[in-house]
Every structure is written in structure tokens, then in C-alpha cells.
Image 1 (cartoon, rainbow, N blue to C red):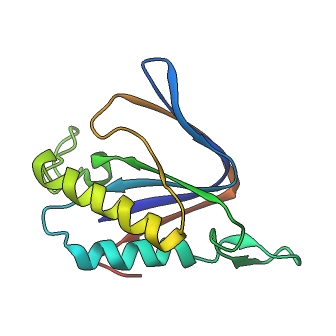
Image 2 (spheres, helix red, strand yellow; image 1 turned 180 degrees about the vertical axis):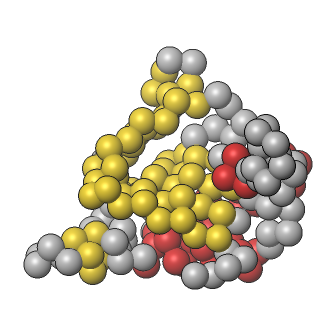
Length: 150
């Protein structure tokens, strides 16, 4: 799995001009699923996201997690995170899992993340044409790949 995590003061998803979901303080997670992803990737990434210390403490140091600040999480599927631009100018998405593989893993990830956070997770709609709006707070953006674990 590959994720772009953004600390936000607000984020929302619109589908067909209507707001599907919106959050205030928290994390916007753009998530791509790969064919080789497993339950181990889900567990590692969900635990990492909930405990990632990227929110300011009282001294203005990034030392608090989304759980500690009681923030929300919005997860949006984005297969284009696995784009390969090695050859030519048209990206290849061959590393991204096909929907029949990606959807169950995406749903399992959202479920595990809700368990870790202790409350529901906001989501986009898998495969929909979404308009994602956000105010990146900081800005803070982090890329995590479960195969690299760095």
C-alpha cells in the first residue's frame, strides 16, 4: 500500500457536485492498493497512521497523534499513486491492484483503521470521480509505502 498523508484543518469529498463527507482537524489519506498487499500491510499502515506524531503539542512541536488530538481521518482511494513514468509520457498504472482485489483490501484497511482510532473513518467512494478539497495544515504531507516501511 502506498499512502499520502496530509495533516489538514479541513477536507472534503464531492461527488456529482454534492458533499459526500467532510472533516475538520485530522488526516486526509490518499491510498493506493497494490496486488501484493496483505493483511500485514493493513495492520502496519493503520497502526502507523493512528500513532504518527505530526500534530503540534503545547510548545508547537509535532509531538501528538491524530488520536491524541481527537482528529478525524478521511481516506480516499487513489490508484494513481502507483503511476510509473519510466517510459514515455503516459503513466502506467500496472502496479495498482484491479478493483476486484483493491476494493476488499481498501475496505479492510478502513475497518482496521476505525478499530485503531476508536471511531468511524470518513471515506470517499471507490472508483468514483471525486473532487477532493483540503486545507493542508503546515503544510505537512508524508508519503508512506508499506513495502519500504520508512
